[in-house]
Length: 175
Image 1: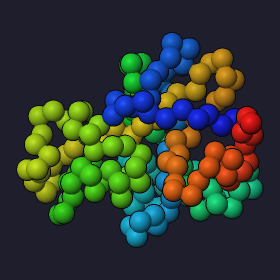
Image 2: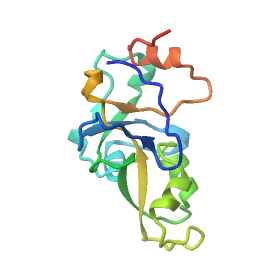
Image 3: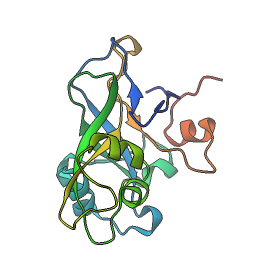
């Protein structure tokens, strides 16, 4: 496993390259209990439409202790496009806004502006409870030339450095 430092260049997601294999399965790192949102395996499965059995625990000794307090939710990337994201369907609940869902429930794995972009027929300030909204979870397929089989999308936290994140995942960070 190697560490990539790429980040979405815009609200459209990651820029894709021609040497990626599509479709692919990528992982979005989801921190259990982040931002006071009570979570369990069923809640994570409901959010990402992933069964409990398909969620990947990160506590098998291959990653550091900090990363072990997380779950990796597999997300399927669609056909190649100029930008990469996994379209996730979410049902609006009481008090939900694009921003609240993006920053708390999805832990910044997307941006509210990206949600607006992929839902052009919805009015963000007039969402009824029960409305189905597509949330683009930013992720990227591994490049064939990198010899990697899996990429994990991780959202940097305020105290993170590239070195600390690499250490948490037990991967090398090129100095």
